[in-house]
Length: 182
Image (cartoon, rainbow, N blue to C red; front, side, top):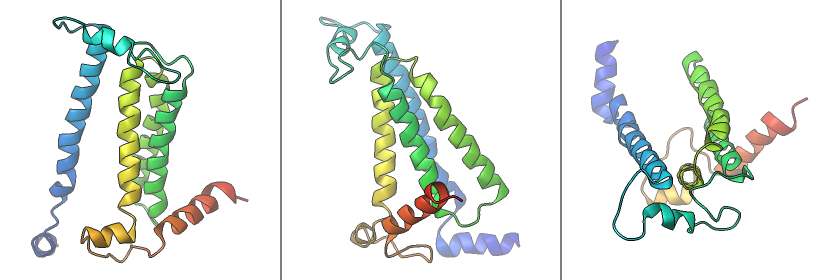
């Protein structure tokens, strides 16, 4: 069996480690950026002239004019939680049958998405805005890579699980799972 799996890895050039390489680069970058933004927002760093903290204190927009303060409206923290939960649900909806391990991981990531809301409410708005932008990019990539036209443009090979109408299928699965439950 191991020999067969090894032959498949070589034949299809799809070793499982390749799927995790992105995570091993993205996760540390996300952590370092988060720590740096937190340090900038709290004034833990020093610079010549106008401090970065002062710039962040006046660099916000809309309901969060001060990026060093907490978002008292909770709009940013709730948005982070909802977007992350949406990403998890899109992933879960594309799976017909999940293994027990995949089910546990999905529940764990759902819990982390919900727990991100109170965590995001206790950190500076600059950090939450970064998390929100990062999550929106992840959601956008997830949706864009489902597009048959984009996949053709990038020469991504068609697989058995690809659909000609991925967005319609996603809406139908979402409706079946959450709205028309009886």
